[in-house]
Image (cartoon, rainbow, N blue to C red; front, side, top):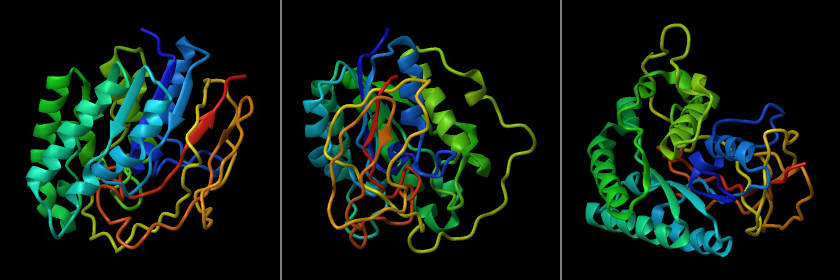
Length: 299
């Protein structure tokens, strides 16, 4: 099956942290890789990435779902939920479960094809957040249930053995590295039944990097640039390197941009508020709050 309009929603994993484009100007990530592969079958593919680091599911629903609906996608993917679990005060499992079920249900009203994700076990990798283990398992159970009930494609990252190899993660051991994003892209395409680069899911050569990690310092230290006004993009495997604001760009208010062929742009946005970027999965994709809205066009 080919797709014509693909929208990616979520937090910093969807934004692409910690997979910097080779020219260090923007983040890339699994969603861009998936879009490029889909564009190989449908060169006119339109692609919008609305991921914003640090966002909880309830914020994603309010801030990103309406924009996604306006774009009338035939495929939408949501990776989020880790920030909901990172809350140290006021966490309620029943509230998170309600958010998950509601988000998946609403997604099926937005697009005929929906992809959702479980979370990997960050608690096994970061001693400082060991307490998250039971929350992640409960979240994953609800996500599996919701995906089954509403007919969504499920990318189940919980059993993936790569979680034990630090080469798949960034310096903060929370966000995904280039290898990690390729692995997620491979799993996503596999769930859709779309052929992909097999090396993305093959074990990395050599021994896994498994040295014990120290507690993550407050804030992951990754600077952000936020999305511009929602709009379409198209992408192609042959598109030239993306251009636009670097990940460190910041400004007092979002800006808009006009897309031209074969370009990808991002617009800066406000500094996240305190607590908007907690150290934890969303500091990984279970991540922080980065904010990028990518626009790409085919040549």
